[in-house]
Length: 459
Image (tube, rainbow, N blue to C red; front, side):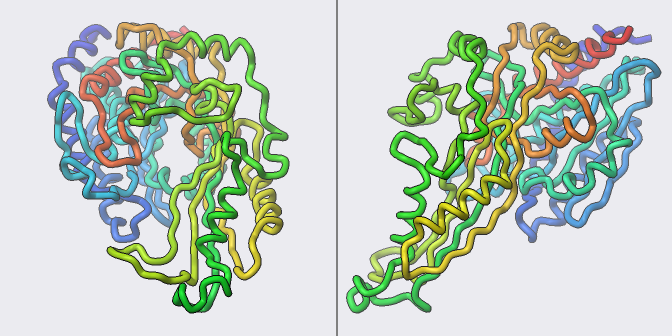
């Protein structure tokens, strides 16, 4: 029988093959929001399904109205824990394309980083768990627990199919813990266990003014300019210190625990280092809170895109007929996306200038989540990271959202581990997305050690 140390040696010796696998998967442009890419999205699902099936796992492609779920499982182990690994094979759009140094679907290594769309979000990170399980089985060493995989193709567009099907799949997905790697380390060389995520609510607001664009000289001052109205409305939603001005917005926001604040204050990254990492001269945010507190545990409002009037070269002096904006809120635990929508609509009715009509379209929303930092699974993760990365992990929250995580907790009644192998400057959702090759390989090792640690919990 192969020893566990031999499995780790095999993982290390297979690093070139593991990297080749990731390169092949990243070449598939699986942009779930693009209806012209449906075949590519399916090809990405087929690729990882074949990878799992070739290792001997039982695999099924579960169809949906959009993109399929890849479900796979190892053999049950009586009396041992069951872990569900969740991830996604779909990726974000690539625009602005001209800002990419190399093609977004032409994986390229520069300075120890692998650049491609999906490198860190989430193909590279979920593949660390796929690789560890496949190599473990190939070594002929029995796994000490059962592992299930659920890898979906709609995470970047809100996980609507999974949300709709989760109740019906709960028996198949039943587990003691969900493991997700779709976030990041705290800082370079400082891995973390993430125990909290903010929620999200996204919207599009459309304003209609005159029936067509008008000459600004002939009509300026006589009709309301929808672009000006839009700017007025958006600016009314947040003040100059970042405090959201919607009625009742902070009613459900939990005060930060003082112990938690003290722990975060001891984290090594400074504001200066953070500002340098994101490329700004000075940070901004709600008064009375640190940078980490503002980006992890305080709610926010952000404008994601604005469209109105002439966008081409040169000047075109018009009053545009329409204006629109896409915006989002990051929510903290206990805040409700549904209650937020009602609050926004009430606010818009009060502040909307005369002379325009408007429509608010909610897109997708999800509440925030918190997980235990004291569970047996969290302790196993701490040991696995310490042994694989050579550093004690820190405990953090993150400001991003993984909409389905809270639903996993509710429907499956399970623990949750968020173990990010990437870095905060990996440019997820931006041009030149990357994943450091060393962290990819360390993540594979950490994944294998995690299975060994969790497998001992019931022994």
